[in-house]
Each structure stands twice: as structure tokens, then as C-alpha cells.
Amino acid sequence: MRPARQTALEKVLPQIAIESPEAALDFPFTPEKVWLEIGFGNGDALAHWHHEFPNTGFIGCEPFINGVSNFCKLVANDDLKNIRIWNDIAQPLMAALPDASIDRVYLLNSDPWPKKRHHRRRVIQQESLDTLWRIMKPGALLILTTDHQSLAEWMLEQTLRHSKFEWTAKCKADWQTPPEGWLTTRYEGKGAVAGRSQVYLTFRKVDCE
Ligand SMILES: C[S@@+](CC[C@H](N)C(=O)[O-])C[C@H]1O[C@@H](n2cnc3c(N)ncnc32)[C@H](O)[C@@H]1O
Image (spheres, rainbow, N blue to C red):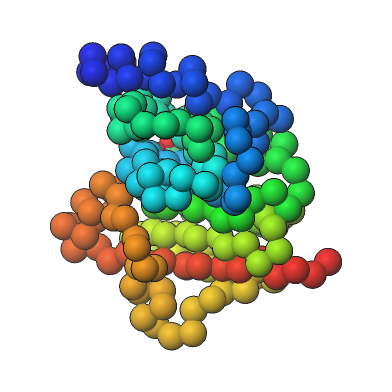
């Protein structure tokens, strides 16, 4: 790890680290809303949102320490009150979150696991959708992006099959165009340069039993 990142990690992470999944929502203020990002990578989007929406609380999950250290460097001089970071896979934290506690969930460019025998490792599964549905507030949005066609089809199929999420797209442009105010992550930018097109799948929690 580069020294600047190591320094930022040591300075910032102790202030924002979630020590146990049960403590995920322990912000030092009462946020108007809470957004969850699963697998934030280098943290470009999370750093952008935390500036844009200071009254929203952000929970970021990322197991990769180099990504976390980059994020720490991006926010090192900021007011950190609206950020909580879980430096591990998201599933145990999601399982511990209370019912109807999250206003929005982002999963951007999730690992595609292209081989069929690895599809069970994809983040979006019926079980994870059950958990997401439970922790999301009524009407909350789940935003999934990818430039990997097989993963896009998988996430759409899994989410529609789950039936407790409705796809908000009304026409092709709705899933081909980034939502307003979108920040292109480094990963998405590299895909665009390589000629891969991104899909933006937005689902709303349907409030039914
Ligand atoms: C392809 S990268 C995309 C990073 C970022 N979202 C972006 O768009 O630039 C996928 C990220 O998901 C993380 N990841 C993989 N499995 C995860 C899990 N179960 N929970 C949380 N993050 C996970 C990886 O460490 C990796 O940083």
C-alpha cells in the first residue's frame, strides 16, 4: 500500500469503522436518510455522495483494504459524521440491520462471476433479496449496475422472480442512461473506454407481505 494511503487509513478508519454488524447505524447524529453501498471499491461514489448529501448517513461495505484506504484518502479532510465503514463482505452486516432501516441500496459493478459453477457467489440471489427487502424502507430504491451482460440478465431475472421489487424502467432509455447526478466510478469509466456499455437497473421495494 502506498504511504499516503496507509497514513489516511490509520487516521480515518478508526473514526468511521463499524466494529460489529449490530453497530452499523450508530452515527453520531440522526441522519434524515440512510443509504447502503455494497462493494464500494475505491469509494469514488461514496465520497461524492457523502459531500452532496451531508444529512444522509452512509454505510459502505468493502472487504478489500486497498479500496478502503483509497476511500479514506478521499475523505481524509472531511467532516466524517455521516460515514460508517464495514471492512468486510456485506452479508453479515445486512443480516444484522433492523427491519425497514435503509432508504436506498447501491450495488455498482458487482463481481460478475462469469462461470456457471460460480453463479452462487453473485451478490444478488433470492436469499440476499429477502434480506434487502426486509431492511429496506417501504418504497426504498435498489440500484444495480453492471457492464457484464450475463450478470445484468441474472440480476434482472433474480429480482423480477423475487416479486417484492418492481422494476422502475418504463422504456429502454431508463436502463441505458445513468440516473440524474450520476458519478461514473473508475471501474465504470474503464469499461466505457473498452467499449462496454453499462446498464442501470433500479427497483423499488413493493410494500406487501
Ligand atoms: C468490480 S468491483 C466494483 C467496485 C465499485 N463498486 C465500482 O463500481 O468501482 C466489486 C467490488 O465488490 C467487492 N465485493 C465483492 N464481494 C462483496 C461482498 N460480498 N460484500 C461487499 N463487497 C463485496 C469487491 O471487493 C470489489 O471491490
